[in-house]
Length: 96
Image 1 (cartoon, rainbow, N blue to C red):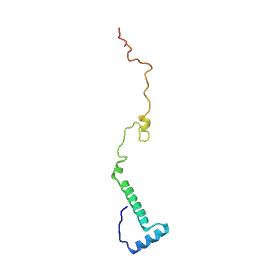
Image 2: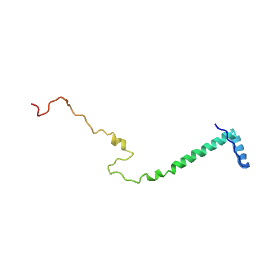
Image 3: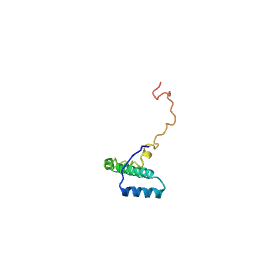
Image 4: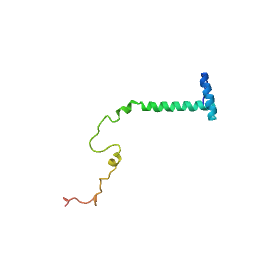
């Protein structure tokens, strides 16, 4: 932790003192809690305001029925089947 010194308005000091007493914590702990909440809120708002969200849904995909919801089913479906019995050294039909 780092030590910080700040100047408060009288009403701010009174509110912090009363709120800290009500929560049974120090004014420093209360200030850290309030600052953390403000930072987290700011970070959430900045993510929500990111212009990248504006491009979602802009493009249309092919009409193949594959969507982000069913992509795994499409990618991992098993259409491949092993040949019944193949031997690599087996002579072909033109072998004499």
